[in-house]
Image (cartoon, rainbow, N blue to C red; front, side, top):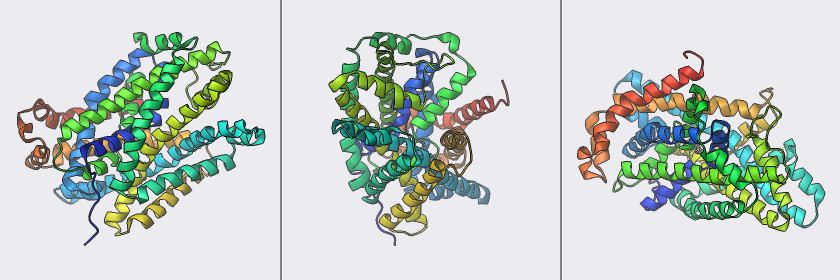
Length: 454
Ligand code: TRP
Protein backbone atom coordinates (compact mmCIF):
# COMPACT_ATOMS: atom_id res chain seq x y z
CA UNK A 1 0.00 0.00 0.00
CA UNK A 2 1.17 3.49 -0.70
CA UNK A 3 1.31 6.12 2.01
CA UNK A 4 -1.99 7.87 2.81
CA UNK A 5 -2.69 10.74 0.45
CA UNK A 6 -2.37 14.32 1.55
CA UNK A 7 -5.47 16.41 2.02
CA UNK A 8 -6.31 20.03 2.73
CA UNK A 9 -7.48 20.37 6.32
CA UNK A 10 -10.29 22.86 5.59
CA UNK A 11 -12.08 24.59 2.77
CA UNK A 12 -10.26 27.81 3.67
CA UNK A 13 -6.99 25.95 3.29
CA UNK A 14 -8.02 24.73 -0.15
CA UNK A 15 -9.27 28.17 -1.12
CA UNK A 16 -6.01 29.86 -0.13
CA UNK A 17 -3.96 27.23 -1.94
CA UNK A 18 -6.03 27.26 -5.13
CA UNK A 19 -6.33 31.05 -5.13
CA UNK A 20 -2.60 31.17 -4.37
CA UNK A 21 -1.94 29.05 -7.43
CA UNK A 22 -4.17 31.22 -9.57
CA UNK A 23 -2.89 34.57 -8.31
CA UNK A 24 0.63 35.07 -9.58
CA UNK A 25 2.74 37.09 -11.94
CA UNK A 26 -0.06 36.58 -14.45
CA UNK A 27 -2.36 38.73 -12.34
CA UNK A 28 -0.05 41.43 -11.10
CA UNK A 29 2.09 41.85 -14.17
CA UNK A 30 0.41 40.12 -17.12
CA UNK A 31 -3.15 41.25 -16.70
CA UNK A 32 -2.65 44.99 -16.09
CA UNK A 33 -0.19 45.40 -18.93
CA UNK A 34 -2.30 43.42 -21.38
CA UNK A 35 -5.25 45.59 -20.43
CA UNK A 36 -3.18 48.73 -20.97
CA UNK A 37 -2.03 47.57 -24.38
CA UNK A 38 -5.45 46.35 -25.56
CA UNK A 39 -7.90 49.17 -25.08
CA UNK A 40 -8.01 49.40 -21.30
CA UNK A 41 -11.44 48.57 -19.95
CA UNK A 42 -12.42 46.94 -23.27
CA UNK A 43 -9.93 44.19 -22.42
CA UNK A 44 -11.08 44.10 -18.81
CA UNK A 45 -14.68 43.50 -19.88
CA UNK A 46 -13.80 40.75 -22.37
CA UNK A 47 -11.55 39.17 -19.76
CA UNK A 48 -14.28 39.16 -17.13
CA UNK A 49 -16.72 37.54 -19.53
CA UNK A 50 -14.23 34.89 -20.61
CA UNK A 51 -13.10 34.18 -17.07
CA UNK A 52 -16.62 33.29 -16.02
CA UNK A 53 -17.93 31.80 -19.27
CA UNK A 54 -14.90 29.79 -20.27
CA UNK A 55 -12.28 29.50 -17.56
CA UNK A 56 -14.68 28.80 -14.70
CA UNK A 57 -16.37 25.85 -16.48
CA UNK A 58 -12.95 24.46 -17.43
CA UNK A 59 -11.76 24.88 -13.84
CA UNK A 60 -14.82 22.93 -12.70
CA UNK A 61 -13.90 20.09 -15.05
CA UNK A 62 -10.46 19.83 -13.44
CA UNK A 63 -11.66 20.13 -9.86
CA UNK A 64 -14.42 17.55 -10.31
CA UNK A 65 -12.26 15.00 -12.11
CA UNK A 66 -9.52 15.48 -9.54
CA UNK A 67 -11.68 15.07 -6.48
CA UNK A 68 -13.40 12.05 -7.98
CA UNK A 69 -10.18 10.26 -8.91
CA UNK A 70 -8.11 11.31 -5.92
CA UNK A 71 -5.12 10.84 -8.20
CA UNK A 72 -2.87 12.88 -10.49
CA UNK A 73 -3.96 13.74 -14.05
CA UNK A 74 -2.54 10.58 -15.70
CA UNK A 75 -4.30 8.23 -13.31
CA UNK A 76 -7.43 10.35 -13.19
CA UNK A 77 -7.97 10.41 -16.96
CA UNK A 78 -7.13 6.71 -17.29
CA UNK A 79 -9.68 6.00 -14.60
CA UNK A 80 -12.45 7.81 -16.46
CA UNK A 81 -11.53 6.30 -19.84
CA UNK A 82 -13.95 3.76 -21.25
CA UNK A 83 -11.76 1.92 -23.72
CA UNK A 84 -8.20 1.56 -25.03
CA UNK A 85 -8.34 4.68 -27.16
CA UNK A 86 -9.57 7.03 -24.47
CA UNK A 87 -7.16 5.43 -22.03
CA UNK A 88 -4.30 6.15 -24.42
CA UNK A 89 -5.42 9.73 -24.97
CA UNK A 90 -5.77 10.16 -21.20
CA UNK A 91 -2.24 8.89 -20.60
CA UNK A 92 -0.75 11.11 -23.28
CA UNK A 93 -2.66 14.18 -22.05
CA UNK A 94 -1.70 13.47 -18.44
CA UNK A 95 1.97 13.17 -19.32
CA UNK A 96 1.62 16.23 -21.54
CA UNK A 97 0.24 18.13 -18.57
CA UNK A 98 3.28 17.18 -16.50
CA UNK A 99 5.60 18.29 -19.28
CA UNK A 100 3.82 21.61 -19.82
CA UNK A 101 3.64 22.33 -16.08
CA UNK A 102 7.38 21.70 -15.87
CA UNK A 103 8.12 23.94 -18.86
CA UNK A 104 5.98 26.72 -17.39
CA UNK A 105 7.79 26.44 -14.08
CA UNK A 106 11.16 26.48 -15.87
CA UNK A 107 10.59 30.03 -17.16
CA UNK A 108 8.42 31.17 -14.26
CA UNK A 109 11.24 30.42 -11.80
CA UNK A 110 13.62 32.64 -13.78
CA UNK A 111 11.21 35.57 -13.75
CA UNK A 112 10.46 34.98 -10.07
CA UNK A 113 14.24 34.93 -9.50
CA UNK A 114 14.44 38.45 -10.94
CA UNK A 115 11.84 39.47 -8.37
CA UNK A 116 13.97 38.04 -5.56
CA UNK A 117 17.03 39.89 -6.86
CA UNK A 118 15.12 43.17 -6.98
CA UNK A 119 13.81 42.54 -3.49
CA UNK A 120 17.38 42.19 -2.20
CA UNK A 121 18.61 45.24 -4.12
CA UNK A 122 17.31 47.99 -1.75
CA UNK A 123 19.13 46.31 1.13
CA UNK A 124 22.37 46.30 -0.82
CA UNK A 125 21.96 49.92 -1.76
CA UNK A 126 21.25 50.79 1.87
CA UNK A 127 24.72 49.61 2.86
CA UNK A 128 26.15 51.40 -0.16
CA UNK A 129 27.40 48.32 -1.95
CA UNK A 130 26.99 49.68 -5.46
CA UNK A 131 28.87 46.87 -7.23
CA UNK A 132 26.39 44.45 -5.66
CA UNK A 133 23.36 46.50 -6.64
CA UNK A 134 24.67 46.67 -10.21
CA UNK A 135 25.11 42.92 -10.27
CA UNK A 136 21.64 42.35 -8.81
CA UNK A 137 19.92 44.45 -11.44
CA UNK A 138 22.16 43.53 -14.39
CA UNK A 139 20.88 40.75 -16.62
CA UNK A 140 23.81 38.33 -16.33
CA UNK A 141 23.59 34.53 -16.53
CA UNK A 142 25.32 34.32 -13.13
CA UNK A 143 22.67 36.55 -11.53
CA UNK A 144 19.86 34.59 -13.16
CA UNK A 145 21.37 31.27 -12.19
CA UNK A 146 21.81 32.34 -8.57
CA UNK A 147 18.31 33.68 -8.06
CA UNK A 148 16.55 30.99 -10.04
CA UNK A 149 18.33 28.53 -7.75
CA UNK A 150 17.22 30.41 -4.63
CA UNK A 151 13.63 30.65 -5.77
CA UNK A 152 13.49 27.02 -6.91
CA UNK A 153 14.99 25.99 -3.59
CA UNK A 154 12.18 27.71 -1.70
CA UNK A 155 9.59 26.12 -3.94
CA UNK A 156 11.10 22.69 -3.30
CA UNK A 157 11.25 23.22 0.46
CA UNK A 158 7.53 23.95 0.61
CA UNK A 159 6.54 21.06 -1.65
CA UNK A 160 8.77 18.67 0.28
CA UNK A 161 6.68 19.42 3.39
CA UNK A 162 3.53 18.06 1.81
CA UNK A 163 -0.01 19.21 1.18
CA UNK A 164 -1.14 20.34 4.60
CA UNK A 165 2.15 21.37 6.20
CA UNK A 166 3.63 22.82 3.02
CA UNK A 167 1.15 24.02 0.42
CA UNK A 168 -1.74 24.82 2.74
CA UNK A 169 0.21 26.36 5.57
CA UNK A 170 2.30 28.63 3.38
CA UNK A 171 -0.61 29.71 1.20
CA UNK A 172 -2.73 30.59 4.23
CA UNK A 173 -0.02 32.92 5.51
CA UNK A 174 1.13 34.35 2.21
CA UNK A 175 -2.22 35.11 0.56
CA UNK A 176 -3.48 37.55 3.20
CA UNK A 177 -0.01 39.16 3.26
CA UNK A 178 -0.26 39.60 -0.50
CA UNK A 179 -3.62 41.31 -0.30
CA UNK A 180 -2.48 43.69 2.44
CA UNK A 181 0.68 44.66 0.54
CA UNK A 182 -1.30 45.21 -2.64
CA UNK A 183 -3.81 47.51 -0.94
CA UNK A 184 -1.10 49.49 0.87
CA UNK A 185 0.77 50.02 -2.38
CA UNK A 186 -2.37 51.18 -4.18
CA UNK A 187 -3.19 53.62 -1.40
CA UNK A 188 0.29 55.10 -1.65
CA UNK A 189 0.55 55.28 -5.43
CA UNK A 190 -2.86 56.88 -5.87
CA UNK A 191 -1.72 59.88 -3.84
CA UNK A 192 1.08 60.62 -6.33
CA UNK A 193 0.95 63.04 -9.27
CA UNK A 194 -0.04 61.38 -12.52
CA UNK A 195 -1.88 58.47 -10.93
CA UNK A 196 -5.29 59.61 -12.15
CA UNK A 197 -4.16 59.58 -15.75
CA UNK A 198 -3.18 55.95 -15.32
CA UNK A 199 -6.54 55.12 -13.80
CA UNK A 200 -8.24 56.70 -16.77
CA UNK A 201 -6.24 54.66 -19.29
CA UNK A 202 -7.08 51.53 -17.33
CA UNK A 203 -10.76 52.15 -16.81
CA UNK A 204 -11.96 54.02 -19.90
CA UNK A 205 -12.95 51.48 -22.53
CA UNK A 206 -11.69 51.95 -26.06
CA UNK A 207 -13.92 49.55 -27.96
CA UNK A 208 -12.25 50.40 -31.25
CA UNK A 209 -9.53 48.02 -30.09
CA UNK A 210 -12.00 45.16 -29.89
CA UNK A 211 -10.42 42.60 -32.25
CA UNK A 212 -10.08 38.81 -32.52
CA UNK A 213 -6.55 39.18 -31.21
CA UNK A 214 -7.92 40.84 -28.12
CA UNK A 215 -10.21 37.86 -27.57
CA UNK A 216 -7.34 35.40 -27.96
CA UNK A 217 -5.13 37.39 -25.72
CA UNK A 218 -7.86 37.53 -23.07
CA UNK A 219 -8.50 33.81 -23.38
CA UNK A 220 -4.84 32.92 -23.02
CA UNK A 221 -4.64 35.22 -20.04
CA UNK A 222 -7.67 33.58 -18.41
CA UNK A 223 -6.25 30.09 -18.92
CA UNK A 224 -2.87 31.05 -17.57
CA UNK A 225 -4.29 32.98 -14.67
CA UNK A 226 -6.52 30.15 -13.48
CA UNK A 227 -3.63 27.67 -13.85
CA UNK A 228 -5.67 25.51 -16.24
CA UNK A 229 -4.85 22.62 -18.54
CA UNK A 230 -1.83 21.07 -16.90
CA UNK A 231 -3.46 19.28 -13.97
CA UNK A 232 -2.59 21.81 -11.27
CA UNK A 233 -6.19 22.43 -10.32
CA UNK A 234 -6.97 18.76 -10.85
CA UNK A 235 -4.40 17.73 -8.27
CA UNK A 236 -5.54 20.43 -5.82
CA UNK A 237 -9.09 19.16 -6.30
CA UNK A 238 -7.87 15.67 -5.49
CA UNK A 239 -6.74 16.88 -2.06
CA UNK A 240 -10.15 18.36 -1.30
CA UNK A 241 -12.57 16.80 1.14
CA UNK A 242 -15.90 15.46 -0.08
CA UNK A 243 -17.86 17.70 2.24
CA UNK A 244 -17.30 20.79 0.14
CA UNK A 245 -19.43 22.10 -2.70
CA UNK A 246 -17.23 22.16 -5.78
CA UNK A 247 -19.21 24.70 -7.85
CA UNK A 248 -19.15 27.12 -4.95
CA UNK A 249 -15.43 26.74 -4.20
CA UNK A 250 -14.58 26.96 -7.90
CA UNK A 251 -16.58 30.17 -8.18
CA UNK A 252 -14.76 31.63 -5.20
CA UNK A 253 -11.37 30.80 -6.66
CA UNK A 254 -12.39 32.45 -9.94
CA UNK A 255 -13.70 35.53 -8.13
CA UNK A 256 -10.54 35.93 -6.06
CA UNK A 257 -8.35 35.50 -9.11
CA UNK A 258 -10.28 37.98 -11.22
CA UNK A 259 -10.64 40.36 -8.28
CA UNK A 260 -6.92 40.46 -7.61
CA UNK A 261 -6.05 40.85 -11.30
CA UNK A 262 -8.42 43.80 -11.51
CA UNK A 263 -7.09 45.30 -8.29
CA UNK A 264 -3.49 44.93 -9.47
CA UNK A 265 -4.43 47.09 -12.45
CA UNK A 266 -5.28 49.85 -9.99
CA UNK A 267 -1.64 49.70 -8.89
CA UNK A 268 0.35 49.09 -12.08
CA UNK A 269 -1.27 51.53 -14.49
CA UNK A 270 -1.30 54.50 -12.09
CA UNK A 271 2.29 53.65 -11.10
CA UNK A 272 3.36 53.85 -14.75
CA UNK A 273 1.88 57.27 -15.20
CA UNK A 274 3.36 58.46 -11.93
CA UNK A 275 6.70 57.30 -13.32
CA UNK A 276 6.05 59.30 -16.48
CA UNK A 277 5.28 62.36 -14.39
CA UNK A 278 8.62 61.81 -12.66
CA UNK A 279 10.41 61.83 -16.00
CA UNK A 280 10.62 58.13 -16.90
CA UNK A 281 9.94 56.95 -20.41
CA UNK A 282 6.84 54.69 -20.35
CA UNK A 283 6.23 54.36 -24.09
CA UNK A 284 8.49 52.35 -26.34
CA UNK A 285 9.90 53.81 -29.55
CA UNK A 286 6.89 52.48 -31.48
CA UNK A 287 4.53 54.39 -29.21
CA UNK A 288 3.24 51.44 -27.20
CA UNK A 289 3.10 51.30 -23.46
CA UNK A 290 6.12 49.36 -22.19
CA UNK A 291 4.72 46.02 -20.99
CA UNK A 292 7.47 43.39 -20.89
CA UNK A 293 10.37 43.05 -18.46
CA UNK A 294 11.14 46.73 -19.09
CA UNK A 295 8.07 47.72 -17.11
CA UNK A 296 8.84 45.81 -13.95
CA UNK A 297 12.62 45.95 -14.16
CA UNK A 298 13.15 49.53 -15.38
CA UNK A 299 10.08 51.76 -15.26
CA UNK A 300 8.98 50.86 -11.75
CA UNK A 301 12.48 50.82 -10.20
CA UNK A 302 13.09 54.27 -11.75
CA UNK A 303 9.87 55.40 -10.11
CA UNK A 304 10.89 54.01 -6.73
CA UNK A 305 14.26 55.76 -7.03
CA UNK A 306 12.56 59.07 -7.65
CA UNK A 307 10.58 58.71 -4.43
CA UNK A 308 13.57 59.04 -2.12
CA UNK A 309 13.54 57.14 1.18
CA UNK A 310 9.87 56.26 0.91
CA UNK A 311 10.69 54.73 -2.47
CA UNK A 312 12.95 52.21 -0.82
CA UNK A 313 10.10 50.90 1.31
CA UNK A 314 7.75 50.95 -1.64
CA UNK A 315 10.27 48.95 -3.68
CA UNK A 316 10.66 46.38 -0.93
CA UNK A 317 6.88 46.08 -0.54
CA UNK A 318 6.37 45.78 -4.29
CA UNK A 319 8.96 43.08 -4.90
CA UNK A 320 7.90 41.21 -1.76
CA UNK A 321 4.41 41.19 -3.25
CA UNK A 322 5.77 39.76 -6.51
CA UNK A 323 7.82 37.09 -4.75
CA UNK A 324 4.86 35.99 -2.62
CA UNK A 325 2.55 35.83 -5.63
CA UNK A 326 5.14 33.78 -7.53
CA UNK A 327 5.80 31.35 -4.72
CA UNK A 328 2.19 30.31 -4.13
CA UNK A 329 1.97 29.71 -7.89
CA UNK A 330 5.27 27.90 -8.39
CA UNK A 331 4.51 25.37 -5.66
CA UNK A 332 1.31 24.45 -7.49
CA UNK A 333 3.29 23.78 -10.67
CA UNK A 334 5.93 21.65 -8.95
CA UNK A 335 3.22 19.62 -7.23
CA UNK A 336 2.13 18.29 -10.65
CA UNK A 337 5.25 16.22 -11.45
CA UNK A 338 5.82 15.46 -7.77
CA UNK A 339 2.35 13.95 -7.29
CA UNK A 340 2.92 11.85 -10.40
CA UNK A 341 6.27 10.57 -9.11
CA UNK A 342 4.70 9.65 -5.79
CA UNK A 343 1.63 7.96 -7.21
CA UNK A 344 2.92 6.38 -10.39
CA UNK A 345 6.59 5.81 -9.72
CA UNK A 346 6.18 4.90 -6.06
CA UNK A 347 8.64 7.51 -4.83
CA UNK A 348 8.55 9.18 -1.43
CA UNK A 349 7.67 12.89 -1.35
CA UNK A 350 11.09 14.25 -0.41
CA UNK A 351 13.16 12.42 -3.04
CA UNK A 352 10.41 13.03 -5.60
CA UNK A 353 10.56 16.77 -4.86
CA UNK A 354 14.33 16.80 -5.12
CA UNK A 355 14.37 14.89 -8.38
CA UNK A 356 11.62 16.87 -10.12
CA UNK A 357 12.88 20.18 -8.73
CA UNK A 358 16.35 19.49 -10.11
CA UNK A 359 15.04 18.41 -13.50
CA UNK A 360 13.05 21.62 -13.77
CA UNK A 361 16.05 23.63 -12.58
CA UNK A 362 18.02 22.01 -15.40
CA UNK A 363 15.27 23.15 -17.80
CA UNK A 364 15.61 26.69 -16.41
CA UNK A 365 19.33 26.51 -17.10
CA UNK A 366 18.65 25.56 -20.68
CA UNK A 367 16.84 28.88 -20.97
CA UNK A 368 19.42 30.88 -19.01
CA UNK A 369 22.28 29.56 -21.12
CA UNK A 370 20.13 29.56 -24.24
CA UNK A 371 20.56 25.96 -25.31
CA UNK A 372 17.64 26.65 -27.65
CA UNK A 373 19.72 29.13 -29.60
CA UNK A 374 16.77 31.47 -29.92
CA UNK A 375 16.60 35.28 -29.81
CA UNK A 376 14.52 35.18 -26.70
CA UNK A 377 14.40 31.62 -25.31
CA UNK A 378 12.30 32.61 -22.31
CA UNK A 379 9.51 34.06 -24.41
CA UNK A 380 9.70 31.13 -26.80
CA UNK A 381 9.17 28.55 -24.03
CA UNK A 382 6.48 30.72 -22.48
CA UNK A 383 4.58 30.91 -25.75
CA UNK A 384 4.83 27.25 -26.64
CA UNK A 385 3.63 26.15 -23.23
CA UNK A 386 0.89 28.70 -22.65
CA UNK A 387 -0.41 29.34 -26.16
CA UNK A 388 -0.36 25.74 -27.39
CA UNK A 389 0.07 23.44 -24.42
CA UNK A 390 -2.51 24.87 -22.04
CA UNK A 391 -5.46 25.39 -24.44
CA UNK A 392 -5.03 22.04 -26.20
CA UNK A 393 -4.82 20.13 -22.94
CA UNK A 394 -7.79 22.18 -21.74
CA UNK A 395 -9.83 20.79 -24.63
CA UNK A 396 -8.90 17.22 -23.66
CA UNK A 397 -9.96 17.84 -20.05
CA UNK A 398 -13.32 19.28 -21.14
CA UNK A 399 -13.87 16.33 -23.48
CA UNK A 400 -13.14 13.90 -20.67
CA UNK A 401 -15.52 15.66 -18.30
CA UNK A 402 -18.20 16.21 -20.91
CA UNK A 403 -18.10 13.18 -23.24
CA UNK A 404 -16.16 10.31 -21.78
CA UNK A 405 -17.08 10.42 -18.12
CA UNK A 406 -20.41 8.70 -17.32
CA UNK A 407 -23.00 11.32 -16.49
CA UNK A 408 -24.31 9.48 -13.41
CA UNK A 409 -20.81 9.30 -11.92
CA UNK A 410 -20.29 12.97 -12.63
CA UNK A 411 -23.53 13.77 -10.86
CA UNK A 412 -22.64 11.60 -7.87
CA UNK A 413 -19.34 13.42 -7.52
CA UNK A 414 -20.93 16.86 -7.66
CA UNK A 415 -23.60 15.83 -5.16
CA UNK A 416 -20.93 15.35 -2.53
CA UNK A 417 -21.01 18.52 -0.50
CA UNK A 418 -23.89 19.85 -2.60
CA UNK A 419 -26.86 17.46 -2.25
CA UNK A 420 -29.40 19.42 -4.22
CA UNK A 421 -27.05 20.06 -7.15
CA UNK A 422 -29.52 18.46 -9.55
CA UNK A 423 -31.95 21.28 -9.00
CA UNK A 424 -29.41 24.05 -9.48
CA UNK A 425 -28.77 26.14 -12.57
CA UNK A 426 -25.23 24.82 -12.48
CA UNK A 427 -26.32 21.27 -13.20
CA UNK A 428 -28.76 22.41 -15.89
CA UNK A 429 -26.09 24.31 -17.80
CA UNK A 430 -22.60 23.13 -17.00
CA UNK A 431 -22.63 19.49 -18.26
CA UNK A 432 -23.54 20.35 -21.85
CA UNK A 433 -21.61 23.55 -21.67
CA UNK A 434 -18.34 21.82 -20.84
CA UNK A 435 -19.22 19.22 -23.45
CA UNK A 436 -19.85 21.53 -26.38
CA UNK A 437 -19.28 25.21 -25.77
CA UNK A 438 -15.92 25.04 -23.97
CA UNK A 439 -14.07 22.82 -26.46
CA UNK A 440 -15.52 24.70 -29.44
CA UNK A 441 -14.66 28.10 -28.00
CA UNK A 442 -11.11 27.04 -27.24
CA UNK A 443 -10.61 25.44 -30.65
CA UNK A 444 -12.13 28.43 -32.43
CA UNK A 445 -9.89 30.85 -30.60
CA UNK A 446 -6.96 28.60 -31.36
CA UNK A 447 -7.82 28.49 -35.06
CA UNK A 448 -8.08 32.26 -35.21
CA UNK A 449 -4.79 32.73 -33.40
CA UNK A 450 -3.06 30.36 -35.81
CA UNK A 451 -4.46 32.24 -38.76
CA UNK A 452 -6.43 29.18 -39.85
CA UNK A 453 -9.58 31.25 -40.09
CA UNK A 454 -10.48 34.91 -39.87
N1 TRP B 1 -1.82 31.26 -12.45
C1 TRP B 1 -0.49 31.67 -12.14
C2 TRP B 1 -0.30 33.13 -12.49
O1 TRP B 1 -1.22 33.81 -12.82
C3 TRP B 1 0.54 30.81 -12.83
C4 TRP B 1 0.31 29.36 -12.69
C5 TRP B 1 0.34 28.60 -11.56
C6 TRP B 1 0.08 28.47 -13.74
N2 TRP B 1 0.12 27.28 -11.85
C7 TRP B 1 -0.04 27.18 -13.18
C8 TRP B 1 -0.05 28.66 -15.09
C9 TRP B 1 -0.31 26.09 -13.98
C10 TRP B 1 -0.31 27.57 -15.88
C11 TRP B 1 -0.44 26.30 -15.34
O2 TRP B 1 0.79 33.64 -12.45
